[in-house]
Image (cartoon, rainbow, N blue to C red):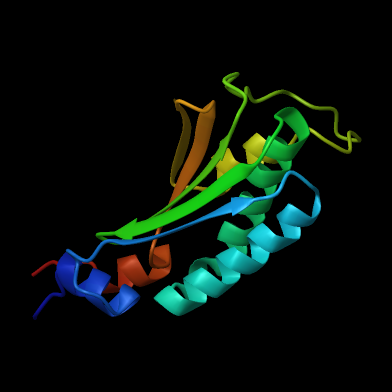
Amino acid sequence: MSSVSRTSIYTTATGQSPATRRTASWWLSADLGSVRTARRLTRDKLTDWGFDDRIEVAELLVSELVANALDHAHGQVHLAFSAENGLLRCEVEDEDPQMPTMRTVDLDAERGRGLLLVDTLSGSWGGTPTPRGKAIWFELPAFAEAEADLFAPMAA
């Protein structure tokens, strides 16, 4: 039986060769309308890149990070995407150097679950200090896990 290599999966999933690096970034204004703008930019860019099965999760996580940045920091927010070797990365940079922490929240609390969502739904996430403040990032595989299992090398 033949098997499909990871390289083939990336090419199939993204429509690009594995060595292709894609980037996009935008400055968002410091108002709540930026959350909606960030969701639209996420949907448009991921559609353009062919990551249709990642759009809903990415939109949710981007909106959480942008809302957190607007809620806890001041000034513009920088939204950036990169995709390379089957991995989609999103960064939201703000002007507050204080790194966020995940909290335990009551079941009936209306706020405080953003980082829990990021932790649960992303492949990995973290924060990086920047000259302006910090960037909180998350990564998603560019293809669905079920697709990865489907194309995993088969045992002989």
